[in-house]
Image (spheres, rainbow, N blue to C red):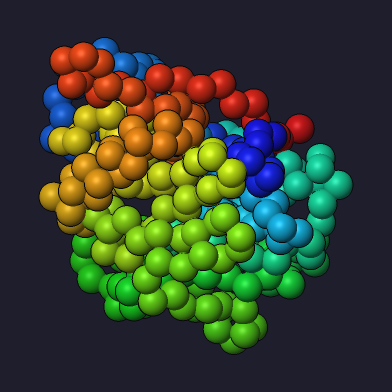
Length: 287
């Protein structure tokens, strides 16, 4: 747990995955990215699936739901997942039940960020993982995620979000919105047109869950570095440019969704104008 003013933030690693560096780094050559990240004997890079619990003014907010427990053994093998369901284990360690969650923010609807919207119970039934929560997503993101094409159908799975309408738990946002005192969902397009990040502000302290605007710390540090999954990479670049200024002005703590080496850090700039993300140690709140 760490504190941003009066707001408590808990970091969960919902799943440990191993990803192909071609997806993580896109056009960045191996000779460059390998200076920062190492691939294993399978030529895969160890990644996290970070979710947050934010407690602000008596409101319990989950930011992204990861993979949860909904994947079969064969699906987990295909995705190279060797640890999973960390968000629910983390909540249990805090003596919180899924029913205690008031709001779930889906930053976007790619399967590694929202498969945990639903949960498989012991009797085999499938139901919303957080039964009393209102789930939030941008309207543009939902529209894109329900009108698939050859480029997007591999990462969007409508059964992770469309049934939430049937349960009356899904609310579509139309742009930036404060969802609890000091906690705002901010559109940061590029990875997808309706992608969001979450900004936390209390007192004179600031933090942000960057999400896939910068999947890894180095993606935020270097404007031209981004994943092959970004639908609009040049838009991602400009989103990062705007947030660079905010991060430098506020000394904000930045939390990255998939960086197993550096889950969080602060952006700094030296006398020559060079940017770097300096690591900030965060302990996982998973048991």
